[in-house]
Structures are given as C-alpha cells and as structure tokens.
Image 1 (cartoon, rainbow, N blue to C red):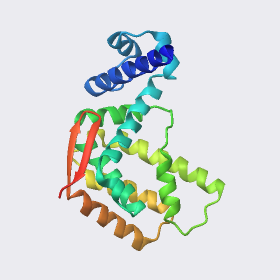
Image 2: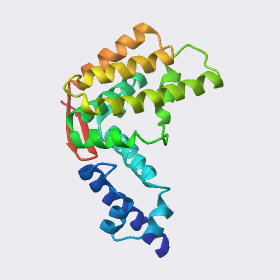
Image 3: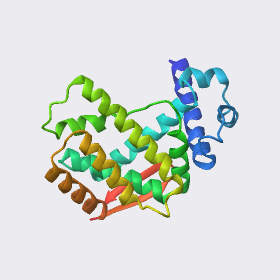
Image 4: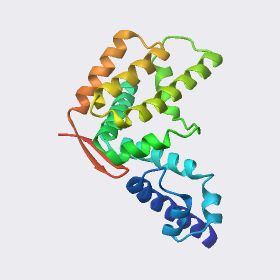
Amino acid sequence: MARHKAGVETKEKIYNTAEILFYENGYVDTKVTDIIDRSRTNKGSFYHHFENKADLGFSIFLDSVEEHYRSSQILELEDSLVKFSLEITIFWYTYFQDAKLRRFSSELNSNDIIYEHDRVYEVCLENTNKKIDDKEFSLIRVANVALYKQLTIYFYDQTQRYNFIEARNFYLKNLFELFAIPHKRREYVLKESLRLFETMDIVIHGFKVVATIRG
C-alpha cells in the first residue's frame, strides 16, 4: 500500500513538473532530463509511468481538455453535437488567446505519434444518418487526425491572418463533412455553439481552462 502511494506521488510530481515546464518553455525545449531534475525523481521512475515525453505531453494536453469540459457548464447541455462543438470552440479560443498554449499544441502535434479522443467519433456517429463501415471509418479517423494536427501546426504563426472562429469553423465543417452530417444540422450546431460561447467567461491559468456560462 505504501509503495503504491509512493508511486502515485512520484507520477504526480513528474506530471505537475512537466505541466509547468511545457507551459513555460514549450514542448521541444523541455527535455526529459529537465523534468526529472526539476521533479527530483529519476529516469527509471519517469519511464515506469510514461512511455516517453510525447506520451506525457499528450496526457497533459488531453487532461486539460477534459478538465475544462468537466469544470464548465458544457456537461449540462443536452445536444451532444452542440456540446462537442462548444468544446472545440473553447479550444481554438485558448489556442489563439494564449501564445504559450499555442506553442505547446503546435510543437506537440508535430510529433508522428497519434493520440485520439474517442468522443470526437462517438458524437459524430450519433449525429449522422450515413452507414459507415469499418473501412470508411478507418479512413475518416486518418483524415481527422491529419486535419487536426496540421491545423494546430499551421495556425501557430498565422494568428494575425486568421482568428479563432475561422480556425474552429474550418475544422468543424470538414469534420462534419467526413461524417456526412446533414447540412441544416451543421449550420444549426455551428451557430448555436458560437452563440453559447459568446455567453461564457473563459479563464486561462496555464493548462487549466475554466469556462462558465454567465448567469
């Protein structure tokens, strides 16, 4: 029991230290040795809990998405596609708003390693009338990952040319097209999720993003 507790505490030390270093220095300039030295752990502990730096980076990235999702009032929305689209809107807002988050996201997604969020596919499959077989679904997943990764890389130095709404619209429209979600449904979801976003207060503290609907 004591050994398990110590293992959990070590993992948390590594994770929390990496959060600070990734945010302050970016993904590329943060080395595994920096995380180990700052957390006062060791190489064996690091690789016991995380496969590599990318595994740790994506864990932090996905956890931050989940955290702002859970801590906001998004969960109270009944429409799953509006809920998901609002989550994506918040992501692109924070990406454009915070240069350090933008740098981390861009550098992290330059990796060849692929991490996916199942909720993307679950929600889209719930909202299409099209029958998608396993072969087509595999291609859709490849296309979605490529689209998302390339956009986070491309927009890194394009924030003067584009805004977060344009980035969000481009990603969602292409995602909805991949799943053949009906056009009227798409338009409603895009408008409604943006309307809800405009009623929200967004607070960014590093990887901690809290979104709440005013009133």
